[in-house]
Structures are given as structure tokens and as C-alpha cells.
Length: 467
Image (spheres, one colour):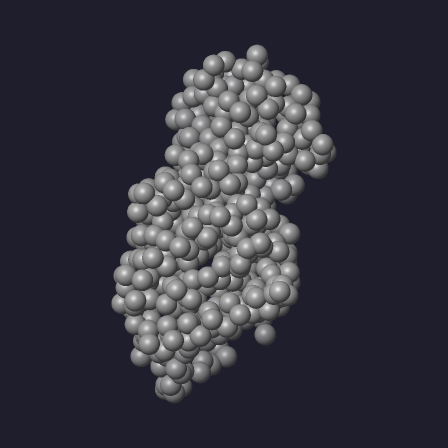
């Protein structure tokens, strides 16, 4: 029997998705869109299925840990459902009588979602919920290691769909085994690309000829200044750095500590489970043994990471992450980049201004546009940092991983994909959310003319520069 051509196989899926989406839109309603989104959300949040997905993700990707993935699957989805509750995505979304414009919500069509192995259930679920809320169909392209989790998630979603009579063809995936050819075809043939993952995938998404929302690389740097609550900062950095074994793009990769509190902060880190390992060359050699990150160390539990780096005799019992003092920044100094592990680069700065300069150098090397953190009681310094650094987010006195992608204690939209603006080569600087899955048609009516005189526009300028 002849094998099916991969492109033909994917085209068949896209035809089914287009057929389902056309019907979903033509016979749509806000109630239907909301019900479908709720079905997808409950598919991952139901406790038994959540645990199964978390266990499967860790078993098949080797990344992260089950308890934190359960938390992530639950809280990210719950937060998203809170964000979209009551949001109008069907019918008239704006009726501006003064300007004569009525705006009508319209779906994108078929969304192609490229998702990473670091969050093989939570990220697809987030994209699927947003797509359904806005009237779209969606085809998910998981990474090779994420295929099993994606298949199981879709099975749970389709089981929920069967309860409400919804079309399972609204939510599909690139058939296994995945391939660059299939993913490329999806990106070229869908109506909107949503891409979270490797920078290679991001580049391909942004050059596929299809409208794309892709997100940049993370490499979070956090400043601890002389006014910070050091124990609170150390505990928040620990909680964030160790969550899901540092798989998040929002996990701190470098801390820049001002000299006045450096020793006290190191002591606070030790109390919170962070061990300083003053052996940069040894850690670099063990973490990048062949120029690539050591798979035995990345996204692993603390004991496995410590063993993989050969540090059993060099850190105290109970160590949850290590901090490595360093000064180097740039391609020749890998500790200054993203490490996807419980390893934190530790920089010392003479004062806050010097800390900002170090942070700027790190961000220019890697992670520009994503986010930086600040632990400080000085009310002026967040603005100073925001003006100095090419970043879309300044996270103040919070555990970075939990805050950047939305938290119940801040106002950011819940998301697993953070746009990085032009600094990171992205079209958005927001957290990916429902608005990126929606477009609109405007009905434009004539209104009374309101043409200004030249004097109304230029009088202030003429007063300064003359005519």
C-alpha cells in the first residue's frame, strides 16, 4: 500500500477544518462559542485528566515535574477563562453612533498553532480556547516530544465536544509523526499562525507568507537593589526559578545585585534554598559539555541537576537551585543566556545605575523585548528601568514566572506566550490573548463633516516656529 504524501494528508485535515469552521461561524452565537471554549477548558482542568496530562508530559518530554505541570494546567486555564468570561466575540462588538461606525466580530478562520515541548498541554489548550472563543477552527502542530500529550488533550476535548454536540473537526492536530514539511504546509495554508517555541520555528512562521503572531526568546534578568526586602526577593526568585524545573521562558536566568546588599542577599538566597557555586568554568563545562545544553541537567529536579553537574559534594542538602557568580556577557559567556535549568547567573553591580547597565547588556545579548524584574522599595526605579531597557514588561516585586504570563494578583492577561515587540522581532508586545484570534468588519456611515481650519491645527506650531 502506498504511503500517503505528508502534504496531502495535512491538506485533508485543513479541508475538514475549513468546513467545520465555516459551519461554526455561519451557525454561530456567543453562547455556542463560549460553550465550546468551556468544553476545551474543562478537558484539561478536570483533575483526573489534568494529572494524566501532566504525568504524560513529563514521561514523554523529560522536562519539568508533574506537580507543577498540574498547577500550570489548572491556573493558566482558569485565569484564561476568567479573562474571557463575558467578553463579546460574536456579533456587534462596538457601535459608535458619533463616528458612524458599527464593528462586527469576525473569526480569523483556521488557526495554525505551533507549540513547544516545554508546555505540551497548557500551551495548546490556551490556543484552542482562544480560537474557539473567537469562532475559529484550529490545527495544532506539537513538537516531536509533545505529540503524545497533544493527542491525549485532543481526545479529552473531543470527548467533551461529544457531550455538547460540537464538531470535533474544529480542533485537530498535525498527524504524527510530525515533520518540518507538514508544519511548513500548515503555516502556509492556514489563515493565522500562532507560534510559540524555538527561534527557528518563529523565523519560519514569520516568513511563511501567512499573518503570524510569534513570540521571542526569554532570558529574564532581575535586579535586587539596596532597598529590597531581601528575604522576600530571595523566596520569590526561588519559587519562580524552580517552578516546573525552569521550563518557563519567564524563569529568571540572571540576578544583578547591588554591592551594598550583595552579601546579605546571598545569605537570603541560602536560606531560601539557593546555593552559590563559585566555579564558573566548571559549571559551564558541565552544563554545555559539547557546546549544547546538557540534557541530563535541563528542566530536571534539583537532585538530578546537581548530579549531572557533578556538584553533590559542593552544595548543601536541600539545595533547590544554584547561583553562579560571573561577570561575562555575550556569546562567549553562555551563563549570560537562557539556561532552561535551575541555574542562575549572579552578577554584582556597584549601584542601581550599574545594575541597569548590566541588565541592558544582558538583554541586548539575548531576551530583548521579553521581560525584566526588579526587587525594590524605591517607587521611581521601575520607571527608570522601563525607560532604559528594551523590554515589554518590568515585573516589580513578584515571582517572575507567575507574574509575567498573568496572575490573579496583577492585571496581565493569562498566557503562555509573551510577545516581545520589535526588540524581539515580534509583531506584538502583549501577552498573547483572545484579541489576537479575532478580526472585525466595520460598517461605515456618513456623518456631519468636521473638517478643521488650518489655524486650529497649526496655530501652536506657528506661534513657536512662524509660518
